[in-house]
Image (cartoon, rainbow, N blue to C red; front, side, top):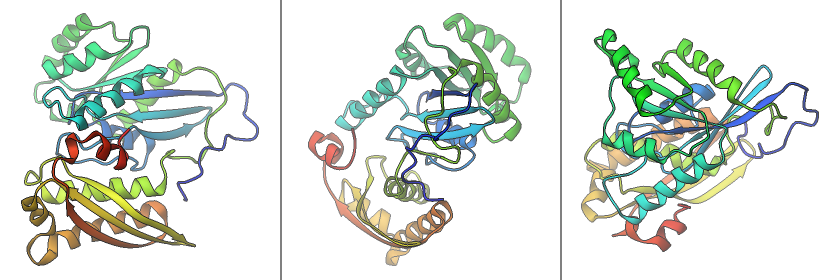
Length: 307
């Protein structure tokens, strides 16, 4: 499927349709992007073990029966670093939840810390908030969840509690059913087959960034990004040239790897996944450049696509 040009509404909306915006919020690394991909049924947001993988508002779309869910995956709210990048990311979180119909507040099942509390305190009043206790599969003593859930209810008047694992399809289906009544009855905003409102160009940069973080592990600081220099369509062929931006010369060596092997692997894995996602042949060129201090430079952030 071509993922571009998905903003055309259906010609004849059916009566009784539901459609609404669902924000997915939480501190970094609670599994928001994994949950979004599971709810949509296909990867539209990147995932890695590194905190702050998601940096943009990602919209994923799922249409089931008479209901269209429009999910907004936000960056994890940053409380520990005050550079320009994190200030921009936090503004993205706040703007994302301002106009939604329901909020999914994602935490790790059985855990609640200061960073979770800071995110919860920012949620707007008057909107239904569903507590999603993710990573249930990692909880050893399930009996301890009941008192934990009771304590969570005392922190906020949640509309629903949903303990789940985003990796279990039955849990994801249950969450969709719980969200449905909170969406307004109105015509769908997107075509029934739409998966995301993001362009293929944007998805290409995200996929490269995912492979970058997955294959460098904890070696590379999160202040690295990907800029698409060229994106050309020739029928079922996409010619893409991209630059990986790092802050230091030493980081450049980490990305390239010995004999260029790591950069080659990043490109290969990104190309293979993009070919599946776009159903097209991908020709991908990758470069690495050093741009010291880019994460604290407002002008550069805008030029790299950060709102």
